[in-house]
Image 1: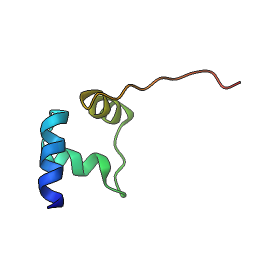
Image 2: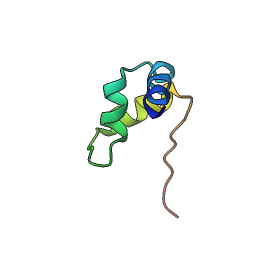
Image 3: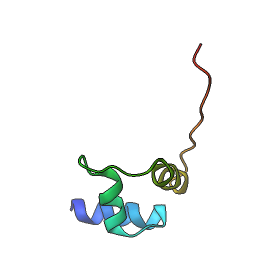
Image 4: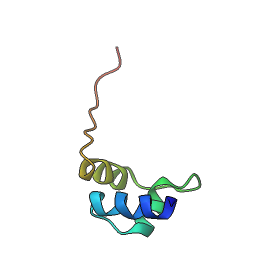
Length: 52
């Protein structure tokens, strides 16, 4: 069942299933660009703001 959900997530994020595992694995060390791109394809926006 979890594999089906990963496949669906990969489809929505426009990446292959192994990329989802590589980005979300607890032992992964994905680039920031990979994480932002993955999130963007899921409709998530990252915003950086100055520390106050």
